[in-house]
Every structure is written in structure tokens, then in C-alpha cells.
Amino acid sequence: VRRRPGGRSARVRRAVLAATIEELAEVGYGAFGFDGVARRAGVHRTTLYRRWRSREDLLVDAIAEYAQVAVPIPDTGSVRDDLLRYATSIVRSVAQPTIRAVVAAYVAEADHNPELAEAVRRYWADRRRLARAMVDRAIERGELPASADADRVFDHVLGPIYLRLLVTREPLAEAELARIVDSALAAARTPSAPGTA
Amino acid sequence: VRRRPGGRSARVRRAVLAATIEELAEVGYGAFGFDGVARRAGVHRTTLYRRWRSREDLLVDAIAEYAQVAVPIPDTGSVRDDLLRYATSIVRSVAQPTIRAVVAAYVAEADHNPELAEAVRRYWADRRRLARAMVDRAIERGELPASADADRVFDHVLGPIYLRLLVTREPLAEAELARIVDSALAAARTPSAPGTA
Image 1 (cartoon, each protein chain N blue to C red):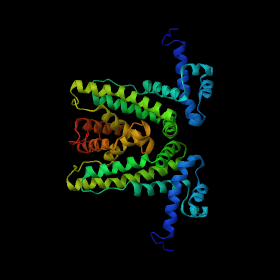
Image 2 (cartoon, each protein chain N blue to C red; image 1 turned 90 degrees about the vertical axis):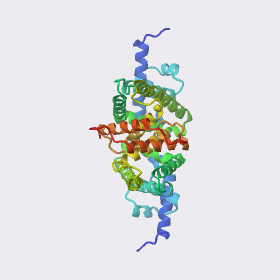
Image 3 (tube, rainbow over the protein chains, first blue to last red; image 1 turned 135 degrees about the horizontal axis):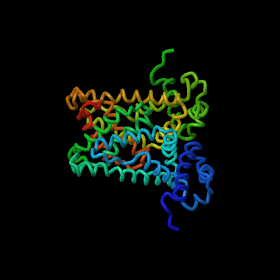
């Protein structure tokens, strides 16, 4: 069966993925499973078993779907503006109580759940790959040197944001994001000391 | 009663704080409390009630005591070496299963527990204040410009470490810490674009 995008199948998928985030945020990882998600989405649980191998797969699909919509990769023509928009949408996402709860749940759970840990790693490898486009385009435009390391930019934009929102719980005004982005860009323009890369 | 440092009172305190980390890592935040910690430390629970107002106070004292020993503020005469040692001891601490469990627990719990959230903020404000010495000394030695912002250095050293160890779960070799430190130093040497600080 060929599935039309936007057809019933796509609608069911979106409903299930949205229900997954809500269900996990509400019941916590221990009680999170196909039955609760199916009930919340108003679908039969066999619908879930047909499409997802495990609750870990389902969760990572749900986070990826959320991120694709809420944290798109901007293409403004300026790497600084791209990174600022990107950082702003990350901060707004992590400010959502359901998203905070989901991140907190997988941070707490993944140490005891190798399948979840692996699914989380796959998710982030994909987000990193997508974000690389912002740095690649900046290099093409001559805004950043060819040596600029997209992974380094990623670490220095997302790192301070997650540190402050989740770990240290210090306020992070959107105005401060410009400083974080400028720091990441300064790092991307500066080679490491010799012999230390 | 004047208490000698290193006397019985100090030994009891250290035993209780070590038991606090172990107890929380083992039972999780829900079941964590004075009774379990007292039992594990082999002291009467009134000993705990006399010294700590709440389990949140106790937890933050325990983390602070751990950090003071495991993540000291180095003073090597070089800001790069100081930050590298500091970063290395953070990575080694967060690699400890008990410490990971404690951080994961407070990340997951603090959204629902304002007293814990406030205690966590106090803890990190203190860690930030202590770490400032590394940047202050670098400015005095002329290694960093007077405009260097210690909070920014802190965010860009700790941010990528916590991001990768807790959130994205990507491997972080100790050799990569030099790049993280160099990025933080590049940021400290580069002013923000005009009008954006």
C-alpha cells in the first residue's frame, strides 16, 4: 500500500507521536509504554506494534518529529542569524514543560537502559548532521574558514543552553543567546593550539 | 561546643554526606530521605535533623562536599592548564555512576520541587564563584584581556561536557577537552559583536 503524505496514515502517525510526548511527560519513563500511548492517541495498540519495534524507538521518533517542526535549521544567508534563530528555538522548546520532562526522563533513564541510550545517540547524531548545513553554507559564503568545525559550533551553541536550562537552572534570557552564538563563532574562527586537536 | 576540624563531628559530617550520595543514587529521589541516609551512615536520624533543614539542603551539601574534593580549582600558573585540569576532573566525576545518578535525579526532580531547584541554583552559583578565580588570575597575568568574562568561560567549558555526557550521550575523550578549553578561551578573547552583549 502506497501511503499518501498527509493522508490518514500520516495523521495517525502524527497523533501517536504527539501522544508519546504527552504520555511520557505525564506518567514518567517507568510507566511509559505502547498501551498508554495508544489509549491517549485513540488508536489500537496493534497500530503501534506494526510501526515501532519498541517504546525506545517510538520515543525517539516522537522527539525527532517534534524537533523537525519546533527546531528547524534556518537558512537566512547569515551564519550568525541562523545560529541565533536555531538557539532561540531550542530555548523555547526546552522551556516547554512536556519537552523538559521528556529530556529529563531520558537523561535519568538512559544509564539503565542501553536500548534507550542507543536510540538517544542516534537521535542526536541525526540532529548534529542536520545542523552541519549552517556551518557548511557559512564556509561556502566565506563567513567561516574552511577549517571551521561544525561539531564544535554545535557543542558550543547547545552546550551552554542545556547546561543552564537543565543542570545549573540559571536564568537564560534570549538576549544572552547572542553572546553564546558569538562565542561559538569565535571558537570556529580560532584554530586549536598546535598538537592539541 | 567548639568543634575541632577532623574531630568526631567532622567525621560524622563526612560520613553522612558520602552516605547521601550513595543513598540517592541507589533509591532515587522519590525514596530519598533522612531515615535512609542515617541508616546508611550508621548515625541516629536526629543527628541529621539537627544539622540539615531538609533533604534538599542535605543533598546540596553532599554535592558541594564531593565537588570540593573531586573538582578542585587548579592554580598551575597557566589558564589553559587550569581549565584543562578542571575539565578533566569534571569529566571523571560525571563518569562516576553515583554522581551521574545524582545529577540525573536532580535534573529530573527539580522541575517539580521548588526547594530542590533553589538549592541546586545556590550550589551552582557557588561553583561559578569559585571557578572565577581561574579567569581572574589569567587577567592579572595578562593571559586574558580585562574584558574576559568568567561566566562565559564557565558556560563554554562545562556546557559541552554536560551536553555530551548527559544529554547527547556522545563519547567525550579526554583529548577532546583541549579543544573545548581552547574554544572557551577563544570566546573569552573575542568581544561580542557591537550592541549584542
